[in-house]
Image 1: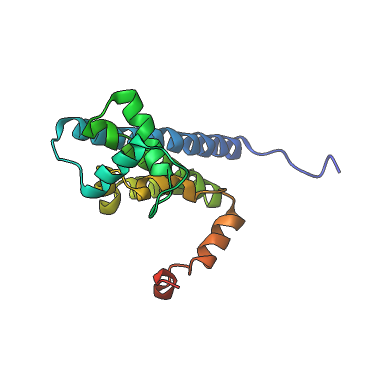
Image 2 (image 1 turned 90 degrees about the vertical axis):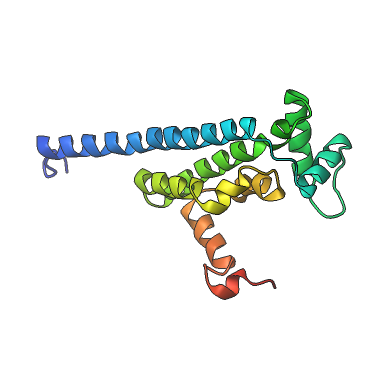
Length: 180
């Protein structure tokens, strides 16, 4: 019935507008924070002189001979290295450049999941937390299947699929992390 619902008071409308503006800002802050972390990692990759690890050299060799699969790993890491070395040449930087970029993509997916499940503020802190993890920081400087496959973890960022995936993986329990 049209006359029974009161319009929002100006103070309520102002608070709602302020909250919506704050929520939009969290996406901007996420982009800025993840871009800054990624830029620092890319600069570090460009100036450091560490040689390739044996696994990285093996992946680079695979990239020279593209195939649909290899005896111990999926082909995506070799395909990514083939792409980056095709663009930037055969150097340690070109071989590893995808790692920090893929971790940035994973951070944005984590933002999307947090924003979808809760709100953009939660997504911001989840993405920032992920990007600053010591393991992620180390993995951003070496090319491995982990860096390549982490962004693929996110199939959909709907609350039901994330919660179902969490429950299927053991829900963070110690037994959920043990092999089958």
